[in-house]
Image (cartoon, rainbow, N blue to C red; front, side, top):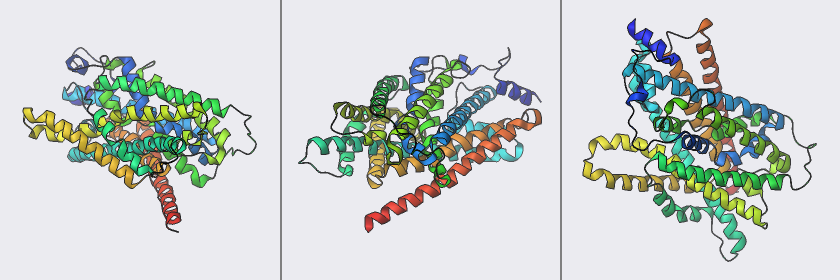
Length: 444
């Protein structure tokens, strides 16, 4: 009974005099401020997904797009909230200063119902695999997006050069390898702030072209084809989710207690993400309609200098975001290799491992340079698992003795997991069919 009482207190996150406080025991080498943590969370979620907003709205129709963006943003923010809250509860029970994503899943099952405790290690491995798959996919998308932007500029201003996008992927390989040698989130936050600046500048330029001429509303769909709704949801989930970086950011904060609450790092970051995505998606769809591409910058005219600046800005923004996303990939690799390495070998292994990891991500991006489809696939499959299904299950398992009046926590999480599974199955089906159709056209 003592353990159960302590667990209920930890879920409510109300420290008592005798309760272990993980914040007092955290020793972070280079802690981040609230501003830097907010910048990292915004940049972790808001990248190429923001620019795919008009394409998402063309799949859903503008009314469904607005409502759907707000609902998905609320669900994604809530899933982040319950994951962090569960992690804090597990820290208090295990008397550990911090836990990462996979460790939180393992601890939740370890302290859950007796029949599920034997699955604690399997939960950890599944979470690690989901993280790795998700962020390798994100790094591939970023590789293709940067290369597409560079190719457009080169094709326009250097007419003698006509190279496929795969060659541009190879050209940015060395700069990405160098940038990914940055080790600490505190330093990566500086790149995130710079990337956010370029992203906001791109957002402003896009609005400049959107409102440059009269917008015609009459031919725009209020409600799109229901068969394309899964593609819309997949794109929005991709844009909203950055859950793989949530635990590293929260664990690296100088004042981690500021991550949750109202106002808090999470509330400010998610509000900014929903605002930017819904406005650009809505007005971008009003301007370009069904011609919207996987990144709105690819719809901008190539002859005007503001459009050229926007293409350069987004390429730089995604470039400076790349090491933040790659941080998750390498963090997993490092946790599994460090115990087997001598101290004098760790630095060389770090450098070599980062180079090999970037090369693998670029190679996958070269093999599948279908930007819109990769975005939908990563959003539908990987982010649905990582950002919706796992948090809903983990909170339910951890709070099995305290599910609230009428078991509202259980009912709420069943809805979240069902939404995640529906997004996963329907989104993957639609995206795979799109990829097959595109490949068939290329072979004809």
